[in-house]
View 1 (cartoon, rainbow, N blue to C red):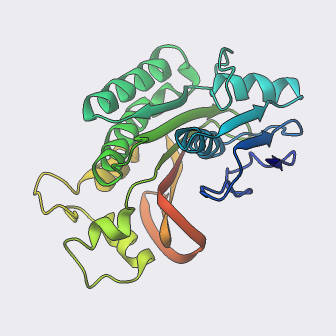
View 2 (view 1 turned 180 degrees about the vertical axis):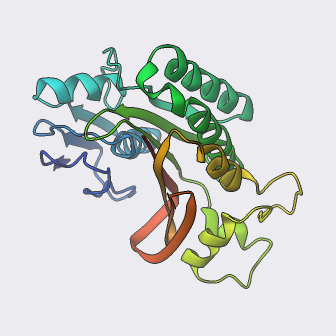
View 3 (view 1 turned 60 degrees about the horizontal axis):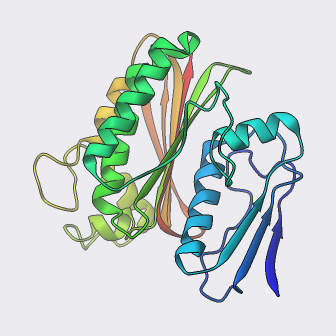
Length: 273
């Protein structure tokens, strides 16, 4: 007996439409059928599915991922290394799903991503520095508060329609931002509020003065004349936080998450003028 999940054609849009349960109760054989999947495919979908596959294999299960039938979706699917083939080449797959465990790996990935944007994908080269800062700082945060056997995952994708855009997805299965920040601020009991406060400059769960600048420096790097807008969504535990830059003004909103999320999951979309 196996556990099978068949995804719909729009399951990759924004990356949150399907549940990938990290449950010890699943049988020994797991199948995720992406045959109907079509474009668009957000990098958060790629990260979440890859984490699901790796987590269950770590538990000793056999996991099969059926790739999309649609040609365009299959090329990007393979280039983003969502499944096991992972040998395609697609310009829009700026950074395929990449696993990191050390801060040195984070810097190498950030530098590689910036180089691709600035020297190979010139239509979005103006977003190179902001993307570098996002990958460097946000993945660094994920390594710090997300310690777990799988490490942290990141993926970056370019889109050109309806606007030129860079989308970044980062995920980990660590303790999560709320629990991490409550090590220093135990009174912040609401998960959404804790996430929002974690984005303030120099607010850190470790108490180290050199930490707590990741979110603020990431947004500062985005404030250039080449930016039309930016949006960051953060889901962790029972909280959801959305940060936006609109006409150089920062806006922040918090809501309860639709369901509990183990670890921390972030998407960051940078839209070029």
